Amino acid sequence: MTREDQLQAFLARSPYLRFLGMTAELAGDEVTGVLPFSPHLIGNTLLPSLHGGVLGAFLETTALAQLTLTQPADRKPRTLDITIEYLRPGRPMTTFARADLRKVGRRVANVQVEAWQEARSQPVAALRGHFTLAED
Amino acid sequence: MSDPNPNLEAAAAMATTVPQAAALGFSMVSAGDARGVMHVPWREDLTADVEGGSLASGVVTSIIDHCCGMAITAARQQRLPTATLDLRIDFLRPPAPRSGVSVEAHCYAMTGAVAFVRAHAWDNDPADPIATAQAAFMLSGAPAPGTGAAG
Image 1: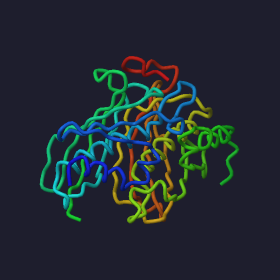
Image 2: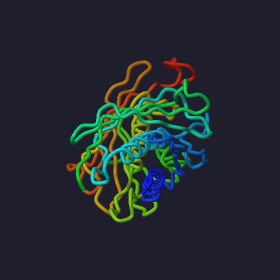
Image 3: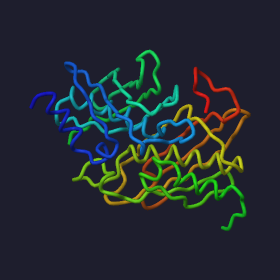
Image 4: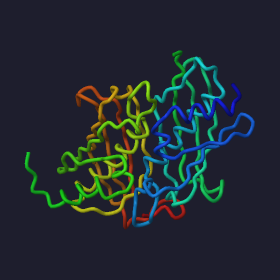
């Protein structure tokens, strides 16, 4: 299975990711999560801005996708804890995210993820998280 | 427990008028005394994977964030915009297959500009949580840190 096939299989397995409308792109072994805007993702109708939970889920999924692609298939990642930092309102437009695997240990991985919209240098949210890499 | 709190309507509206909350099917269970309880029913299109049948962690993140906002509304006696600064969630275990998820959030402290909230989520028994959370929120009217983060 190619990395692209692995990534598409990861996304297709989750009905919730279809609900979000999230996709992802691959550059070598690096995943870029892509979240096109959709009205049902709005959390604040006055601004308007994306829901904080949507941004958190998008960041977490980008981390899981990156771990899935770089770890053996039997080391299926599961989310242990996440800390989401909200830096700017998520505007009603496409959001991107990339994950940095800071440390991948025998049982736990530490991952940092950043999401941005118009400019990579102006992140809208970031996530730090631990993920278990238990065997299935 | 009946609660004559005038913010009840505002809190209830929060569960249904926000597009993401409506799309996920959130409902308010109770609000008052700086606390809020919300519920999201199980739905197959919100599961992490079809075989497992548990609600996705993203759904849990969304309802925790939302319920924290409702606890602040309950504490402030009115619905004013808030902006989440940070939100930490410990995922203790996945929800049981085909189970909805409930969340209770408590706004236990408020300074002039910031509200501090704790929350826990469960599937069947509040004493057996699936996730616990801690969050800080900027309150409207106060200057938000960073460029353009003000609500």
